[in-house]
Image 1: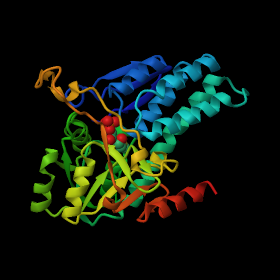
Image 2 (image 1 turned 90 degrees about the horizontal axis):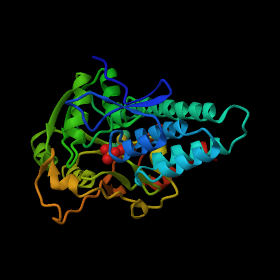
Image 3 (image 1 turned 120 degrees about the vertical axis):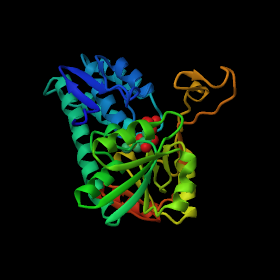
Image 4 (image 1 turned 90 degrees about the vertical axis):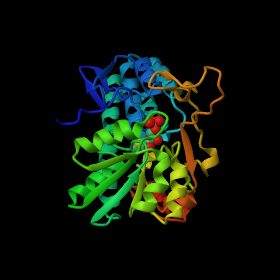
Length: 338
Ligand code: MRU
């Protein structure tokens, strides 16, 4: 079976593969207005930093009857999730189109831009895959957290794109995917994607990372990111920082794989990255079963920030950035924006 597209523009509506229901139920959600897309992003029917930006761009198209409606859609969509800078990057591109000269009908221009955002992301993923796979030995065991795959992007994936590119290059890849509490993006989504591709994947609980590293030769940790600050600090799914500390203890290279749309050069360091806090019920409940009472104190940040000094390299489509990251990321920034 070929894996269905996570995001598809079809018959003037945005069709999303409903990631809340995977892997047990492969079903789709048709969004017909920006509000539908906003709710899909908030409830994680579509998730992953690049995918959120792409879905939001199509969400603007859905409401773009007039300039005023398009701006209202952009404003609403920008309130959905605060951490992934890809969302704001995509919406800034859509805002610029709204402000542009009306030589072609607004909706057509916005749709062309949404398609362009998606195509650029897929191309970036392929290039990152090419750069990233060169960091892996011929027979590799890698460890990943959350889902940074085709489901989280326009297609192919960032961290999972590196694994796919390594397989294409004739390398043998074995993957440990941790389950990723509380919403199990690792065991539900990453395991599903890799299995569909025939890549050898073993699921572990995230608390098992030290046990895995002490028993197995792990060649690399590969993770995605939601926002990378100019100094290299990287926000990603909660638990990434703990994983980076374990990797450092065992001297395992820790690679962050992310498109340039995830890099926020205006953000000087991790402390400036806004971290989304989600509904505590996501932790109070497990598969619909109540584990803790409604008023039980719970903290539920969706992301943490891995400090730059725990990161071996950041793989982008502009190249592989090495420490000191402010210098290497600034050089990539200057390459395109002199
Ligand atoms: O809350 P989520 O599922 O949207 O979190 C996703 C992640 O943390 C991913 O690792 C990140 O967005 C990179 S996706 C290429």
